Length: 632
Image 1 (cartoon, one colour):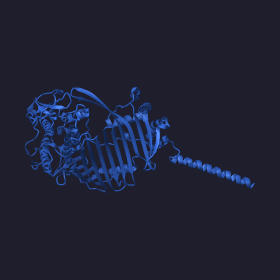
Image 2 (cartoon, rainbow, N blue to C red):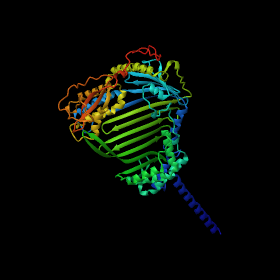
Image 3 (cartoon, helix red, strand yellow):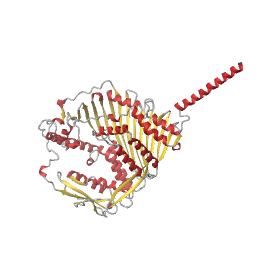
Image 4 (cartoon, rainbow, N blue to C red):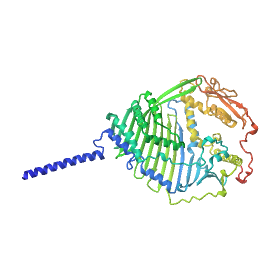
């Protein structure tokens, strides 16, 4: 009897152990990655990115953004840029070196310039104010103030006036007319400009589940296990990858579109987003349109190449997403009298990385294009330090490198300190110039008086820092710097105008700096072009690199070989302010580079009706916009 009792106990213990083992394995399967296939793991971490606890875009970031909307704060920060022309890797000539040095010497003015700001923000009460200072160097700066309360937006600078000068965000079409900007009825400019949150872009939990069940899960189930791989990384993170051919991508797209063509829920969602953005009542897509797209896609011949998607997680949270795919770039460019087509295949890598700690958060977005010979990249970094406190430091930067031509970085930093209140007072409307309240002719006279004051101040400061006044302002280099670097590269790569096998991109980049002035232009604009050409001509000792200025009309593009002797000083036609001129270009029929610029006067229909560009007096505006303090 005791033997039977002992056997029963043993059997019960074994059964309990087996149940415990099965339960443990089940829990491990559900809550850990043990026993899951690579495909199941890939799907798991894709899905985890929308979970509140493991979301890729964390709740701390959204909470911080919400806090800025409802809580007043003081802030201070800066905006900077750093642009550098890179020495061409395929040229060791002294001309190339000298040109790169000269361009970087010019870019240094822009790199030394920074914008500092400090102020108060109260989004909930629709008001903010900032003290802004443009520093050209440590000793020369341009301070001014910005203020916004309700619908009023204004600027103030002591060197101009003690008054704020601004506009009211109301009756915008009428204001634009007063400022001399033609507004047609078809422009559909609203009376009041507002940033509205698109409600249609918000996805409900039901819509997210619908997308996963109908578009994500079916695709994953249709793919075989051998498409998925798993890699353990040195930092203890784990990557899950799927690699597909372009033909497989095409078939997946067709599968998804076929599902969409029968899915009224998502069709209606897409149309509602389009209608809210466009303020239209028409539909963007229908089942018929989708079926037509499917038919065209089925006939499309895919190219070689693969698409790779990698999801990386550490401690159960996704911290990196990477897409690698081929990009075909076709370029049609005109070289003098011929049209040619180039086609390059780039391997494009798009990566989003997240680095998160208890109080710090950083996102890094990178795009890399590489064709084996040339490489370009763009990177955006967004970091938030102490994001869970009342004192947050934001740093946002954009970095771009174009082949071996130019590198540029733009940085925005902002220190945010939350407070119970910040005390932004209302405008004193008796001492504030709101342009909406005045007649068009009075505004035009006022602005014509204001312009020379600002231009004079700018010229004084540019002379003080030694900056060429014809280039307006170093801030201009933040935008034009990359174009100057590309121009320098094309001029000094060791082959320009000496080798007929140059790429179309080089020719176009070279010509574009002049072609932007092509067509009918004012005397002032043509004078600028003449200065650009003369500066260009004096920067080279090679006659074939020079451009002649003539009074010929070359039509849509004449043929004129490059000069064989130095042109010397170009004599341009007399240019009169207020008159218009036609600008045309001639090209070397062999290389396609511009060799001559033709400037011809365009007859005016009624010169007597033209307005003077500048009002040459500083008299008081008739309706009293400002008093006699507005003087040169």
